[in-house]
Length: 142
Image (cartoon, rainbow, N blue to C red; front, top):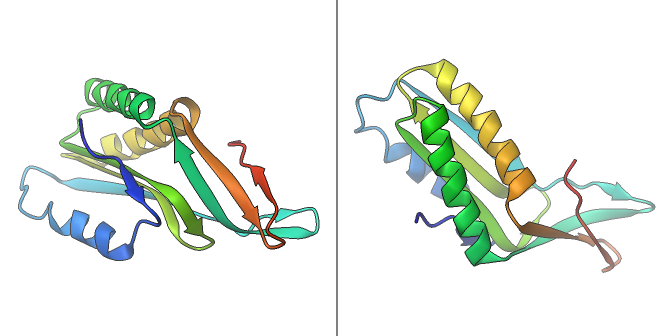
């Protein structure tokens, strides 16, 4: 199974390196990337300053593997990468990185949206929103 979880924020350097690694794959004609960034949401009179992500990693890795396999069956993909943060990610930092490659652009657009929705709906990843008064609440995906 592929490594999915990274400790802390996903750095721009990590993203750039991932893109650069695909330059030698000449059957690829299209890439699509989804980057999820922590927002400074308002909660009452407080503001989110970070999210602390936790997961049941073994269960999450199994579910992510199933999602990957289903994506390769459903779409004509060359490559597929999903990365998600664990631990604290501050406002403005990247917490999820989905990178899809195919021969044609239509497939990458459809696959990326499908993948992000599958991860949000089915993978046991939990976010504790840390507020500027040091209080917290559990994040609910909409």
